[in-house]
Image (cartoon, rainbow, N blue to C red):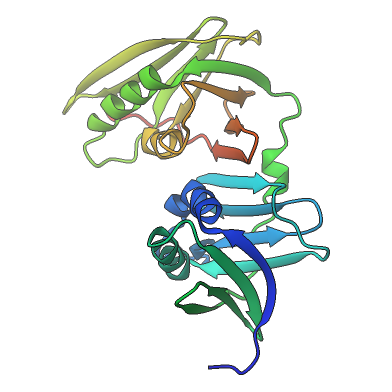
Length: 254
């Protein structure tokens, strides 16, 4: 073990656990792009943020509760993220100290020091894809949408097939036809959507993963057209959570 650890900050275990749970689920295991097999941990004088992506969807959580005078950025491997989460779950009321030691990051609790090497590859420049300029806001009730996505997933039968999403003022229609399994068409009420009608395709499990990380009864999102992502947002007093899903090709299971 190294002789000297440069402690940088302390974070309450419960806060760390909430932040990790917002993004850890999306980190892939063996992506061809090694930079995607980790979670980007950034902190500066304004906020702390964690970001993860699998190339199809992206999750980011930010909080202004924890800051540092200087900007730091670390790309933590998935396995280390999961171990840190387990260690934090065992005693969420304790303070976790984060420190640097050469090319390693150290998470320290009352009874442990957890060392992890960092991924050297460059994490993708994700900020441009989160730009909502020209996007229309909308809201829907979370529970009916979750149930629709689960039923849509049952029709996939292991196939990577995009479901058709049609947006118009007041209504979002979800359609999927798989002749080997069945057909689905359901309508979900939309609020605050005032843009032109359009159609796009999303892979429903990607949407479902993100919706399960949201806790509000009413979900806010932004949408533009058939070639741009859908961006969900959850704003609270302690953190801001953003979840983005890219559209997929219009191939259908028929």
